[in-house]
Image (tube, each protein chain N blue to C red):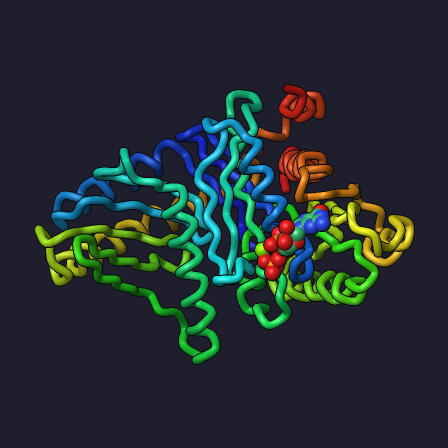
Length: 195
Length: 160
Ligand SMILES: Nc1nc2c(ncn2[C@@H]2O[C@H](COP(=O)(O)OP(=O)(O)OP(=O)(O)O)[C@@H](O)[C@H]2O)c(=O)[nH]1
Ligand SMILES: [Mg+2]
């Protein structure tokens, strides 16, 4: 649910990075944080365990520039991917305007990706959202690793509706901004349609 | 879909700011701010120049979301009030009409009793303002200012 502030002439949108444990959601945000001008970003907050697994969420506020005199501000969140943190994932999805599903390309993680995507659908549905009606993009991450599934296979399993999708190596930044721009664009387009 | 669109207009913003400014003084507090349940800052007052209000807003909303989740498990409606006591700063968090969150930060110059009392009144006033705001937002025929943006406008945002 975007927030239009006529007073501050700002539009605020919430984007959530979803996906299985260790797929690279936090790494996406860290890369964005590192590569964004100081004046366009706020502090990145990570509520994580001692082993750097996301415990509740990561948060990164970004400004993307102005449209017709309105500042566009995006609040990026990641969910904790580990299965047992489901209650927290549901909370983070509240008020979401756009979703990035980060898939782990490794063959051994195919099941985990499918489960996480189903979990995303279920959790959205519980709050009255339908994934297919939301601005939504997919990133196939960890393309640098040796034992990975082909993009065609991943696409078939995880992106049957053919939303915009990207190959990524979040650790070095490949695909990270393409993914972000694509979802931001969809969110703004939805807003234009009066979503 | 989900929640209704959150919109803030100048008129209501000024009313909210008045309530927040007055609460700051009457509660002898250091900082007062209002956040929506999604973590977006709506208004703030007090010593905020060196304060990361964006981060605070997101964490406050996360906090309320987490306790709200706990309440649900306990079949409670909500835990509407929270208080955290620090060595120097204390923080009082109040859910207003299940819509927005009112946060008061204060030190030893004030007291929990005083803050509670003043928050209660501010809450009533804020409820009235937010109800009016919601009615306004839901009035049909109010077009989004974004209805007129073009694909080109959106593309331009990403071209630099
Ligand atoms: N080789 C490789 N490693 C990656 C890539 N992206 C992330 N990683 C590594 O994968 C590990 C997990 O990354 P995180 O970003 O913490 O994963 P996450 O999705 O946030 O995990 P949770 O917080 O548990 O849900 C880290 O060691 C990252 O450095 C990638 O593209 N390639
Ligand atoms: Mg993480």
